[in-house]
Length: 284
Image (cartoon, rainbow, N blue to C red; front, side, top):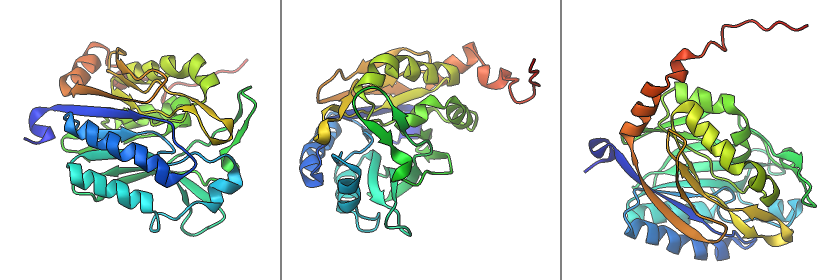
């Protein structure tokens, strides 16, 4: 039975602590994919920086491959095909194909046959200081994306975003107005900002757009001392948290019901009621 026939979708979030060693991280991730598939997941979601978090910018660049060279991408494509599932790879840290001194933070949606269905390059660069002892300057190393991505996935329409994108609601409104039923927000959220903002922002993006939000997450302490928040979430279109992975390695699974999207949007049709594009601003 296809996804479009059932109008429901069994989704798994994988939460773990990515290492600096890509192969060692895959040794954690591949068994999690197998376990999630065995439990019935039709779509399995991995966090941002899915295969590694490096201690510094130079290590990140030195150890990076282009998309065509990436052995991790090939391994993940093989896993999707082996288990016959959709695999949303939150992001891989890759060398830019044409500028080898620059990188891209790229999400992949892999089909059950192992082929890449869609790619999304993170649009909003994380250039901040959050009082955790580290400075984050993604724009110094990464080329940002310039295009929102919406994918038809067996009757569901999936919007792809990454981590810091969460703080820019116009992107989510654009995806929802284009027909998104689910929007993924894979993340490596810092512990400091996660404790303050993670849950309210995830629920807000679900509520204001009437969509399911699926946010696989990194957790724990990584190379170089970086700490990520965890708490991978699935939130329904009414803003209810369906599951929360807590702060340690976990697989969480939920069955998403397509009817919930229609019900939430019928109750509060904010996508159709918005006047923001037509009003004037008066400044005094």
